[in-house]
Length: 293
Image (tube, rainbow, N blue to C red):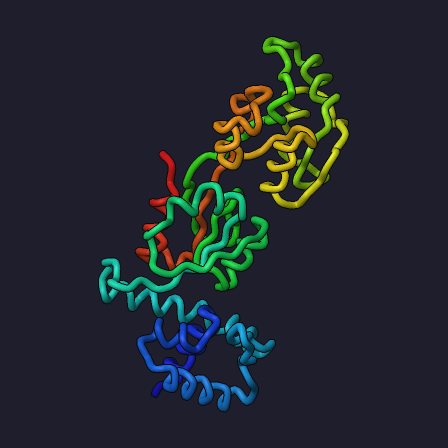
């Protein structure tokens, strides 16, 4: 067995989190994977994983080794895929997807049913997910930020629009208000936000209302799904991604207070992946499923 196979099996254990998962991906038996992993650990002179009830947890030496070899082996795998052709394999490998939790729950989950046979999802902030993708800990990420690392590529899946919503019992301001009047009305309402910074809200206030945001933040909670629920319960008003509150709007649990979609520049939902994985059929299939013309 060549040392190259040692590294391939090491990467499979690292990415699947288990010997059984690595054996399935590599089409080997679990004893074979264990044997090759032991051989690599003997050559390295240190344990690469700690076996836990939840799977194989990489040691600091394992993390360091992964960082040293994953890019070269991924490039080699890309060449191998090119030699085999670019047809979709009968059993596609597991995909490790990073995404914001509200995007995955409200939009992606329904669209990805049946697209790939195995998927492991990790939630996080945009920059965190892109860093994990660049390091090889994820296969793809969906974020609102375009990647800047030269090793990453991206495609825009859809535009991200916003809605200004409040509880159903709150009467919206009369359409046609002057900018100063609208700012005064909104400033008198309690607000619910994901963070104290409220970047989208403050940008709307400054660009469209031409004044700083000074409204009272009645609740700050770091989960957009909780923000939406708080608006439904009457805590206050908020500017949220339209896809997150679409169902609540249709059901009458919240109401649109002002048509901000045409006033706020929409951001993009962006699929990012490593350049060496640009020919992976399963990533293209996921991107196609999440794409909105």
